[in-house]
Image 1 (cartoon, rainbow, N blue to C red):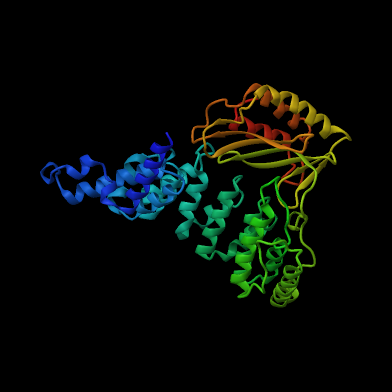
Image 2 (image 1 turned 90 degrees about the vertical axis):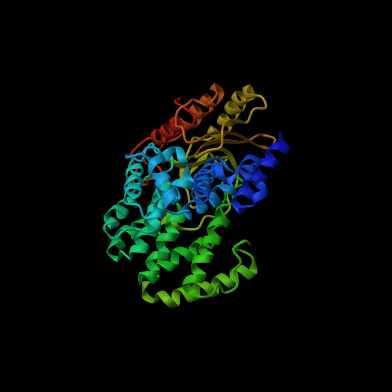
Length: 430
């Protein structure tokens, strides 16, 4: 099996490289007389080849294949129009990499199809559709992109900022400022950088603050990821990184000194526009400690939730400087005990489904200090109940600790209901 997989991967990469030896023997040996037109047949064969590789090749091959497909021009455009269908519904079967290059052909019908599927909450590749449209936005789409800034998927909101930048739609400043308090750090950073470019240097403070982040979601180094992004943006905006190393803690002596120099340069550029303080969601989070339980929900349809229960009987909601829900003393320890009893029924099974755009992951740090995880994942089809009964019970236990009232904080607003809805999309109804 491993040898066959290796041959398939090698074949995929060779096909992308255009190596003749990688082509099936039948295609190489076929006499020219059997083909209606050598050039035409070769191009059409490449269209089908790159379509298939972009859909089902390895993770490294898929984006390369999509780029090669886009370079084939008219034959590829015609085939995508045919496969997409009049309403664009066929785009779902082509996969995210193909959707992301669908607008590259300049076809008005394909562009209209992308807008139609973007409006469909159950379309599995909405983020890819938004990125496709944002690469070369059309002037009369400004209002539509501005509206995407309120979408429930952060990838769509992020793409909207790219489009507003490309259109230089400066009368959308208010909509961009609203994203400085977005739940997703990547969106806040993109909004801050755009506002600086549009003459609002006070937004530099958001990016400087991101360099102080040291938070993680269990073993996922979210703070380090934020530092790398903010470092790149600040270096472009200020022309110097002043020696800051994003891969190292901001608390090291060298980084602390570099950060002081960098902040001084940002303050000097901002002048009186430098904010006296930042909203809580934009403030840097330090390293988290005592995390016991985790529920991570990431869906290309229902959005994302990062929930952590710690040994201080708190639920931390979101990434970065998370919102905090205080629980009754002893709640988390009782939760852990109940969860450990239920997951024991699962034996050694830790994964259900197939790799895809919907993910539901449970984490539990046992009394022995060992981190254990259970993962469900779905592909583009939204149907199917993947979650085994013991994990249904685990999910219910966790949900019961979440607030479900209206809240001015979007992370907490009807949190239990929203998380339950996401769980239904991901692993199936509880």
